[in-house]
Image 1: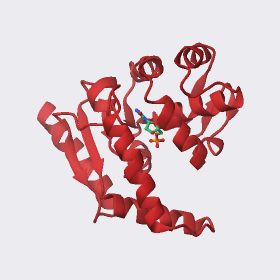
Image 2: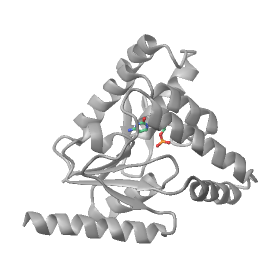
Image 3: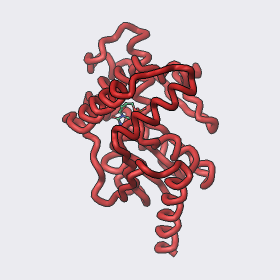
Image 4: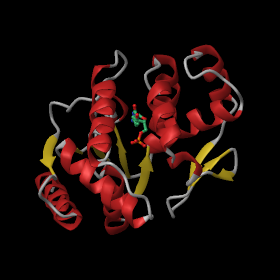
Length: 220
Ligand code: DC
């Protein structure tokens, strides 16, 4: 059984997928972190973020692995924190618009999902990577709500941000993700949409768990 969770930035996909994976004993694959690793390594190596050929060559020479504690290893080095900066978010968005870069990472993601039960989160999981996933969720929230969540998260880390600016950044990334030519973010026809704007994390997890249960019962 594979579970696909797609949706815009900041909708809580990774946190929800992580909790579900623990409860269900599945492997969680956060595909966004793979695009982030590519962007991070490109910057370290002085490769332009729009040089598709050089990026593809670099990817062929790059190992990206995960462990069960949500750590991300780039060529053996734990980069979990390095890839979460604002600079890398923007750079990841750029490299993820390149069709050949996507093709290489999609192939790896499909390979990782082979023979095991995975919960994969990203933008194109239900539409491209795991087209035949048993359960597909499209997780959304209004951009204001997502900005508020980011604001709170920043505050917890001692950073005071500008809510309007956060919302503008989120709107910009949404636009980029939904308007790119290569695999734009969109809800798969057979995905179930959950608007988490007024829901707690636990409520979203419980909703998805009941969707999975229903699906399992339908299979029995
Ligand atoms: O989910 P995230 O913010 O870590 O993703 C980083 C970037 O990668 C974001 O701009 C969207 C892109 N991405 C993608 O295009 N396809 C995926 N499957 C996952 C992420």
